Image (cartoon, rainbow, N blue to C red; front, side):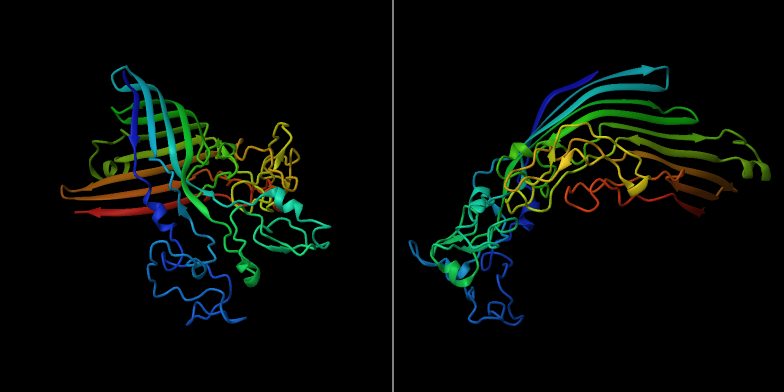
Amino acid sequence: MSWLTRATASTAIQDQSLFVEVGDAPFGLFYVSPVPVYLEEPYKNRTTPPSPVGNRFPFTIPPAGATGIWPIYLPVSGSPTFKPTNKLPYAEHFNFTIQRELGKSSVLSVGYVASWGRHLFSQIEANPGIASKCLAVAPPLIAPGGECGPFGEDQIYNLTNGTAVNGTRPYSVTSGRELANGQLDFSSNSWEATVANSNYNSLQTSLEKKVGDLRFLAAYTWSKSLDNSSGFSDPINPYNPNNSRALSQFDITHNFVFSYGYEFPFFRNGHGFKGRALGGWSISGITRFTTGFPVTLSESDDASLCGCNGADVPNYNGQPIHFFDPRGPGNQLFDTSPFSPETIGVLGTANRRFFHGPGFNNWDLAVRKNTMIGERMALEFRAEFFNIFNHAQFENPDGDVVGSNFGQVTSARDPRIGQFALKFAF
């Protein structure tokens, strides 16, 4: 019996962020130009000179207290930034395992294994659109047809009363510069923030046999993994990160794996042609039956008026999800009728991941033949088959409620693959 009640591990901020947090020129590697420019003159507007963005080089550090230095570095768009309030990520691990010998060659293990992650690194929109501000830009404040709507967070709206609404995001400059250039000074920018967390709990069992001609390892895991971001590139709801909490992208409820090998005892000590031809055979393989990965639900039409990635999900009426055989008409995996698009300006009600896609039924098999030729030479033949029974291993369906393939399976993993090898050793 072994146990580990709690182990805490702190880690440094992931180096991955350094390849994303590039900043804007001259402070970073590149900048997003708001207008078409010349290749040889990247700060000169090709359409309506002079360019609204001046040359940023050479850069001179301004004196302390200097003002009016920002216009040359605007607009700021698509520039991920490290959040100053970030905390050090850490994880807590728990396990309790009992092992029991069965007979003289087998061992049974049963254990509880858990891992809780806190302050994990992810991306979250720092400047999301304000839906109420967008909905207010409507007639009679603006001429019919010019009202604010999806993907309109970075537009400038000239109202009938002579004023202007400079986009719908909370951070915007009202100096009039953006009106002259037709480009907002600030648009979508993300925080690289330690706002994610995770929770994994599992029952893990295994049965192992190592002695004799037959050797095998059978393992079964029943588990659940929850988080509000399954990785650095898995976006989070910017209004309330807790609303993104759902099954992890990699969650698998049931996972059974059976690996085995058997050396045929026939003609093991045989001599002559018969012993060499019929002896030395063995077979091995890996069999896996598992639940599929969760289906990620989304809505790509910006109906929430957020202007960001990670907030839009469809509405869900709470009815049970009915599943179909994806081999059927339309390759439909589940009934989509419980889902509907968002109401404009209102976030959807569905949990973004709460049911699983197609599972796995996979058999990999290998046959091996060793033949000794004298005392110094050996010939090995090996045949390997992946997915030997050619089961259709479907990928997850499209989870975009406004997509043309919503709920449909459009791809599959590899079919049966076989390969053969012959090796001569001397």
